[in-house]
Amino acid sequence: MVDTVIHSELFLLTLTVGIFLLSGFIFRKTKFMLLHPVLLTAVAVIIFLKTANIDYSHYKQSVALLDFALGMSVVALGYLMYEQVERLKKATMPVVGATLAGCIVGIGLVVGIALMFGMERDIITSIAPKSVTVPIAIAVSEPLGGHVAVTSVVVFCTGVLGSICGPKLLALVGVNDPMARGFALGAASHGIGTARAIELGAVEGAMSGLAMALTGFGTAVLLPIVEKYLY
Image (cartoon, rainbow, N blue to C red; front, side, top):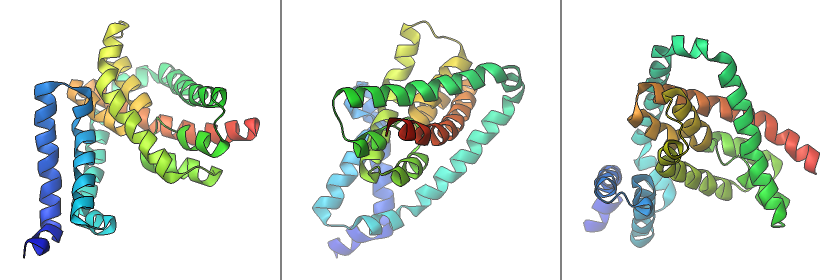
């Protein structure tokens, strides 16, 4: 009976949402970096699935509603961008320049540091698209010989780190403009950073969503060129 309940789709969906809400409460109280709700939820769910011997494919099917909700959140993000369309029109050139700079620096630093440490090509390819959302990162790295698992973990960690440290780091270096703050978060830490940007304000959220999309496109174009040049 207990085993049947644990394996039920409703239980797994409720458990995931409950763990995330509890993780969010813990993080707000402690402000401890390693207790970020996304990270804490992922670890807790992995431990539970392993302990209960639940196959990931079954779990993924059980939380399909959350995937649907994620798609709806993207639509909501588009509305935020629409509300800020006049601001965006006035900042076309800075946005283009920031996107280009972000893609070059984001990929260049990773590739440069990895080469310094003598990493293999497949690992470099796997970690280079760290700053774009997982579906784009995988679509870019896998055809070039990257490892999906490595790419997914690196992108996840980048998003969590950017969400936690990004706002504080921007404040520390004197970046207080909401458009600049939002764009920086989206360009550096994709969807998780965008979620944090939305908490900061509507302008930050809109710019972060725009940066996430443009950085994804720029990385998809730039990374194959870097690969061809290096190898």
